[in-house]
Length: 73
Image 1 (spheres, rainbow, N blue to C red):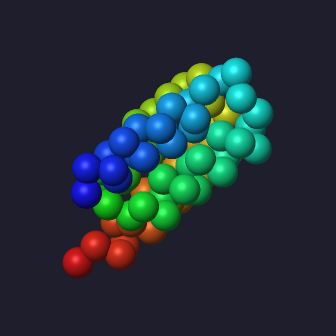
Image 2: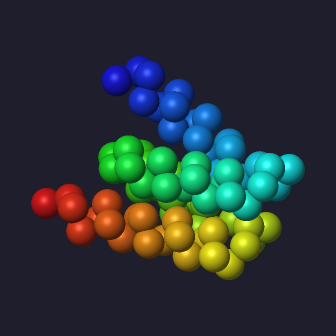
């Protein structure tokens, strides 16, 4: 389990790095969503709150966060 937070941190770093392409950041957001944990949910909400990202990226983060919420029981 120790590897998952490190992976999550790296993906969030990529997803919010404005020096990278939108495509790469979008892929990182999708990968965070695929992790599907509570920590991933919090990370996605943080990404969605980042006003420097594009509207589409922020909406994508919210979409993935919603999927995680729906899958939790």
